[in-house]
Image (cartoon, each protein chain N blue to C red):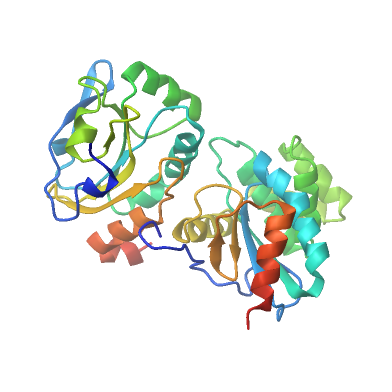
Length: 181
Length: 164
């Protein structure tokens, strides 16, 4: 919150979330991100690397924060990842979207869905009917309420991480958090 | 020299003002009497942080509407500049030009930066009676987000806070 010292995650990590890493990991990293945001695109390999370095000590959660006016494809991309999530393939779509940030038209999304083996009829149907629009908005509002002011915004064990998110700094912060009892 | 800690505080009646939002259209604070007003002073159109902040607020207009609140952006840029900025960023709320005399309204709210000739990045939530109920000055380079605004609106109207 603006007047407090630190911003905190208002929606705890739970069963609604997309999670990588063990539930009892020593430290949890939450990212609020936008698939069309170039900064998030740069953060994507950084997160991959800190995941590699911390291994089972780290639990990673991704939540949607599409800023649609500036990023016209971000909302649909976020919904596409949720459509894939409904078929148990959230992370495959998440990775594909960040690896193809320049090609996020609906026809691209459909192509990616096919490539990762989703049921194409269900995927297109869910995308067309905006089946996960409210879910994406829920993520967005939870971010706003937690003090997310742009993307990417990270939280380490529920506290907003305002430092630089390069590999070394983020690894150090996560390692320190993982050591805390 | 005024500084951040002289921002008008909660409990103060908001100074009345009338500013141009387009070259031939004025917006006054008392146009909104009966509704909460969110007044967002920012240093400049086009600067990266301001853009992100306004883009975020643009996504939250539905949320502010639940409280029947009106969002007004204010900077010392002129109305032609505001028009171009709002058009380019697809902003769907008024931007007011605190342009002549420059920074006059920002000064009245204690939100002017003499050293830079711009306003602070300062937020005010003003209630339906025209009284400031919350104010906050962010470091100029930091986007203050919207959590403080939403909390202040909820405090004004707890029912809207829980109704969806």
